[in-house]
Image 1 (cartoon, one colour):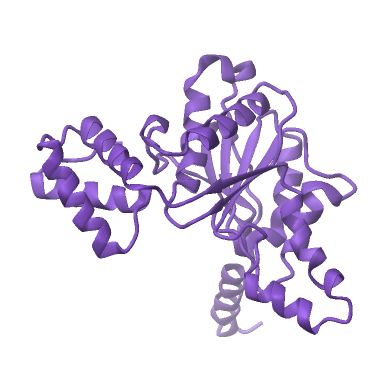
Image 2 (tube, helix red, strand yellow):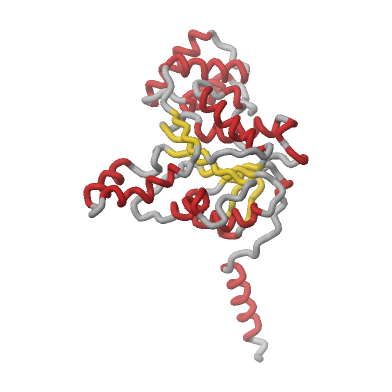
Length: 290
């Protein structure tokens, strides 16, 4: 073989190696308490520090907080528990609650059987087709894990819901006993209402046309609804943040500024309250440490 060809072959080999999926690396679930599933490489990326607030700072959702905390607590100690769908208005604390509950469970020394903290694993909606692959890995792990999918929804041509549906209840193997699935969505049935109505109006059998997709939400044993908060609750959230982060201003002044802020955003929610607190802390020269 000509020596002139060898460098070219080496460059081709290097290019093919970069294009090919990386071989699955051995994942150490003891490396962190939270991970993000990287579907392309079948890798769980450790998250050293999760972006979350303390569970006590989540106001106006006490019933949902108690239900999800109790469900997760039972799962953590090996008792039966349900998959959960947290649905409702934007910015009302759905994903914040999932992350806060996970942290609260791991702060309780009685909630880590055999010294193995509960793991939180985030999977992106577009990667749901690889969920069986993730479950096959977790099935043999000694750890208990909550798989979390934020902002879950499906459009008319999206078939990835079938992977999730089979995993939740319908598959031969089903969900491993050491895995729970939590999802958040703005839609109770995970698909737009106009899509449901359109399929019903154009189908030969309207009820069967949407049953397959709508029934996915029925696979979640817990449905927790979240709604925009009233002004009293909005103020309670603001007051809780101010007390926690040492933002010392007269309460009436803070409330007046918070009302003005919410009016410019067109809504009152936990997310709007948090955005206001970040603005207030910045103006006061205060750092927020979570």
